[in-house]
Image (cartoon, rainbow, N blue to C red; front, side, top):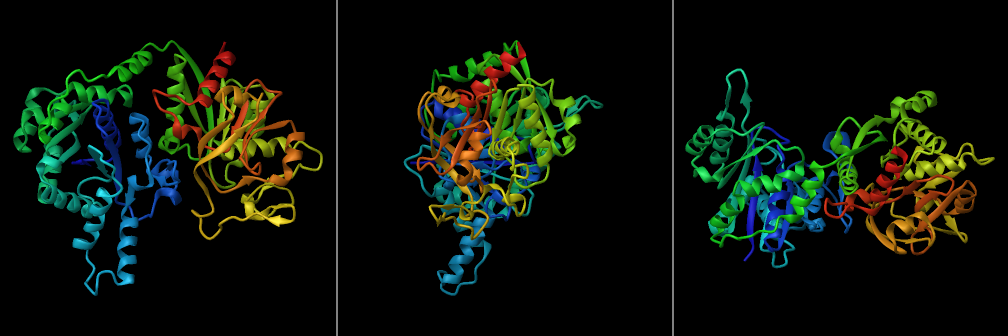
Length: 540
């Protein structure tokens, strides 16, 4: 019978519920259990697809084409478990489903209310689409005390009553601040957070306390006493050098013993943690470093490109190298001279995805500098499209080459598929809504033999995740290749450009997909492995 672990957070946001959920999932997976990890988000958007990354962080895309919360990226990276559409829900989706049922008359004239209709829908989501999982870990977004998360907390309270204590576990993550002036840890915020939960009918079974440093047994005993928990159920999580230390920190604190005790399961002995130990051993022994300039438009929040940051980190560890990233706002380098002065000293330049014309000039300038100084360049999604635009604009008659994303143009090198024609036939493309007009999820690319990208993947067919609306226009393939670009990866039907590279440059690759979404610490992505290797050659 499936057992459910519910993870909530209190005191402040951004304590790391996603990392804790991922770490617990990883440890249980290493114990040979089948695990599923889910995120319940309290905001009213249907999904994060239309939310500004500068406010909410990146949008993580699953193989089956769902735009989800960035925490699903952590789940995949820590566990290797491929997330699905059914692993992320929002209040918006829940309410939309309830209202759809109300319009259909499914409630037979009943007054539709948060309890039981909304909470019932949440419970259905939690238990839906399972396949004999041993554990389902559900992270509840937001902070205890937020109005938005109340229906979710009520739903998991009801599930405890329905399933019983031996099939449910409440884990609460809080902050224990240290006041240097008083030379002591303050437990009151944690006490209040637990009290808030108790007022909602939820008694935490495990309390995870974030702190800047190890706190003494006195503080732990005080929390245990006032929060109605056994001392062993109060677990410290001190700040880590990297998020990838957290699984081992939790293991050493005895979290598995507590989980198994709650569920009446025998404690697993000799859990093989070698994967994490070897990875961290490499991390601690790093000797080299390279500098990468990431030129984007959402650089004010590092979480906007979270998977990209992690993918570079993974491949850096693979090459025993620290990847130092400078996040550069493309709007600040619209002047080519300023751009050259700033970027020419970097070991690598990377232009990631993004939407809209804003900041495009700075990105195009970065591409020009990468070409001029033979700096290894990686363009992802919009970055690849701009690399093609920059190249073809150097051809006679193509100076004004553009994208229809920027407005009307006589040279739509980048455009939506319904704007194309092939053999006098118009391409079909769903433009009915913003989400429907996007290519989302995993698609196949066919690689050209003899190309650099073929030597990287070592196979001629790959599957990568996409999230974009505009494509490289099929009708300009010939001119693009005349500009010095090799189209080394195409869709199986030969219509869609997936990968471009330059043969006159030591390492210049653009990809339409998002390789960063499939990188993990134990299996860094081949594109990033090759890129870091190129940076090291540049570095030497």
